[in-house]
Length: 134
Image (cartoon, rainbow, N blue to C red; front, side, top):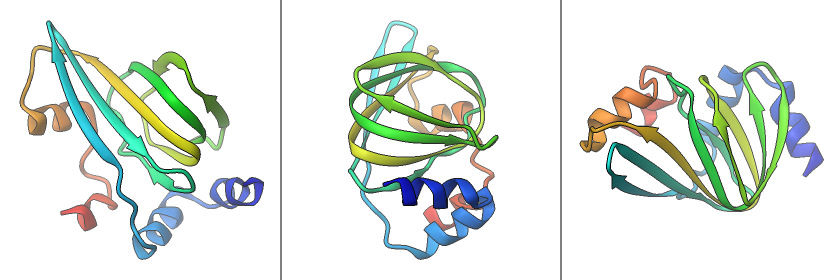
């Protein structure tokens, strides 16, 4: 595990993105929940995966319901997260090494319920990785 984390943190984000685009892709399931002035995006990420998140445009609440992972921020800072926990998520892109299967929620205050509009409102879809997703 430490070798994988060291490899992730030693590479620049663009290099890591290019490497991940060439690797086999894993399935991360998404669910969407809505409440009064509230949107929750839940994602499940499998153990052993390296996940490159889309850059968030704003701070938002995060709830980690299950699992364990190491997050690497654009600054190079490494943080281990162990469920259960709730915290304020920051702007920008993060890379995660999933140690134990993670169930993670991003929580946004909004009246919007259109998933495509929410995606454009919450994250930056102009990053190079997204070209392969389309």
